[in-house]
Each structure stands twice: as structure tokens, then as C-alpha cells.
Image 1 (cartoon, one colour):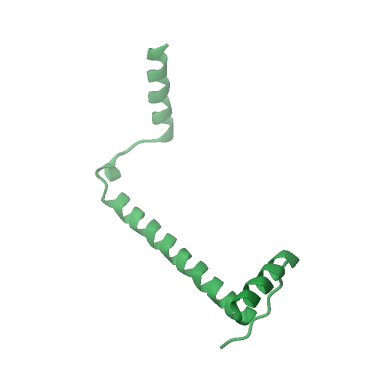
Image 2 (cartoon, rainbow, N blue to C red):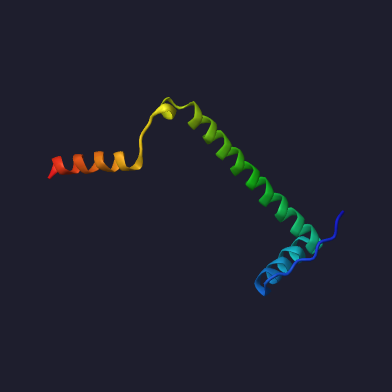
Length: 83
């Protein structure tokens, strides 16, 4: 294992103490478990973004050519007709 030194707010330290005491495990174990959960969630989010990006690349709209200005003009024309 690699040793790390971290600084905690008083609130985080209190919560860490409470969790470790109630579970009867060292504070370092609580920190490792929390970090594992956090990193797993980060990996899941990254995978979801990658999946979405791949779906977008496969979209039928990927070859559409438009600009923000064109969309704005089209939107204002539509609103003008509704008035």
C-alpha cells in the first residue's frame, strides 16, 4: 500500500470518526471504501458519456450542416408567424 496524507474539514473528520467507530473498522478503511465507490461512479459516468458520444456519432443527423445563426433565424421566423 502507498501512504497518503490528507486534510479534512472538522465536519468530515467527525463523520469519518462516527462511521469508523460504528462499524468497528479503521478510519483508513472507511476512506478507501469511499474512494472506491467514488471512482466506480466516475468510471460509470465516463462510460455513459462515451456510449452517448458513440450514439451521437452514429446518428442520422451527424452529417447535417447548420450554424447557430441559421437556427436562430429559423426560430425567429417561426415565432414571427405565430404572432
